[in-house]
Image (cartoon, rainbow, N blue to C red; front, side):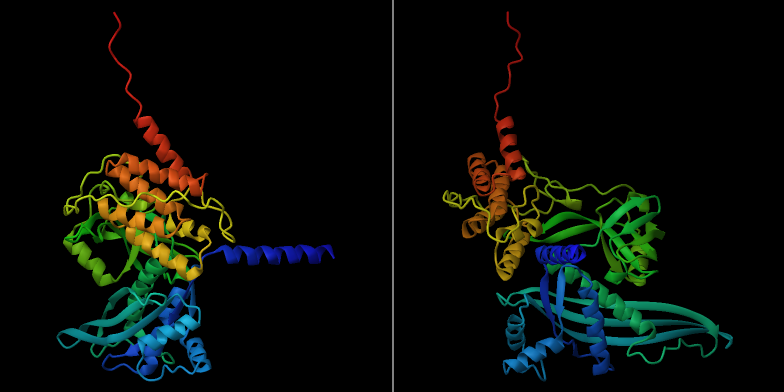
Length: 470
């Protein structure tokens, strides 16, 4: 009886811990075959490879096409023939999905070129290119949150006697060098899906000498011999209205995986791939092909010293809050004239929302804070995306956006804190104090807001006179 009770308690604990983790449900439609020379069977195989790639994420649950079709039949909705985006989104909503992924394969080709000498020895170069177009749709709003195309490339040289060729293994839909190109394209797409949907980035876990530990393992599609670009984020790029379009990246080095474990891998710096001793824990990584690595080596743009972080960015997770002075970045376009946003609302509930598991008291990460607000999963995910978009703004644009989020979500103590932090960076101290106090009225134990107010109080004290008394 005692053993049964212990086992029962363990099962309940596992269920409870699983329910606390935020998981995003994604429906994946079959990739359309728009490439010359490729069969529908091969297109289906590429879809399966991509699905497995994103399903390995701990934050993503994939609803496959077969399940979506079953739900469509139950509700008499058809997805036969060409994919009807609106119909597929409707079915995804019925399946409880938050996002739907659509894709098409537009290029699937391989070729070779040979160089002979005396009719005896041929050097043959085999090249394959696979291009996949993909878009992610938010089923709640219908918004396309990501639209992109990636080309996977693979290149191999073979030296042998005349008529040399690379044989393809039988029994597989895609084999040889084409399979490597598919893997390259799918890995790049999978990385972007994880970043966009689950805020899940691949990073350097530890560094020292020529070897580094990466946060990608066998479950993330890592393989021995794969190449990764190590980079840090640099200056923001603004449009004419002051909105952030993205950030430049500082390539630090290229590394190659030499050992793969379940949840991580070990990599080593490659020849002419930069100085791996400049790599730091927290640097981001992205998969690249061998041809992209060769291009980086030819350009010789690797830094000789550690790239300097631009003021105002949160490179490698560093939280540059509590700044009273903000230096414009090089590509900054003058911001719109500051117009005060509505004052913070004073009547805000202080009680912890039901089923939230308690407030997050230390983090400013939307992925950690928003799950504590007790919102439905779809609404919480939409709010998280809004926070991520607001984080890319600066000055008045950022302030007005955080004010909008705080006023439309009365329990969002993170938005209130961010409104105060942005106001402080603009020198608007009264508004900053109001928003910090509003954040604490929702969550009295929120450390970032406490520290911000303490910082303001400390910097507001009159300086002691240095004159000597006579």
